[in-house]
Amino acid sequence: MVVVWRFSQHDSLDGRGGLLASARWHTRGHQILYCAANPVTVVLDLLLHSQVRDPSALDGRGFNKIHVPDDLSRRDLEQAQLPPDWLRQEAVTRAWGDRRLMEQESALLFVRSVLVPET
Image 1 (cartoon, rainbow, N blue to C red):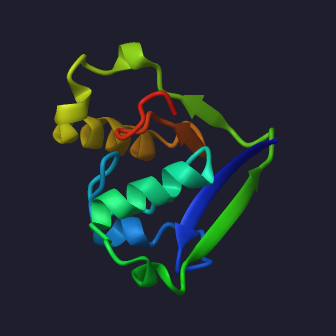
Image 2 (image 1 turned 30 degrees about the vertical axis):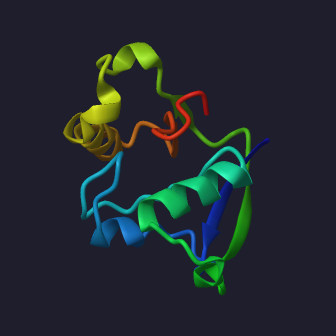
């Protein structure tokens, strides 16, 4: 079993946020749920992207620890599948992610973190 984390003010895991806004691995209009391999990466990502400077702005948010069953289909992104400068090419990563979402080849897609590519 794999464990992934979210830090959110919502308990829902329906991916509706992806319908409203684009992010690194998708364009707006796709139901998608972003998670991380550990709680620290989730908070780091939130702090950087939201530019939160006052910790009280995180009130009302909490960690969601999600246990992913081993039998759920999974695909891992390999570094070789992306161009060398993928960190600076958001259009490339969005197109790649959109393609995978439309193909529905797996329920989970493990991708690299832009902030900490080793995760």
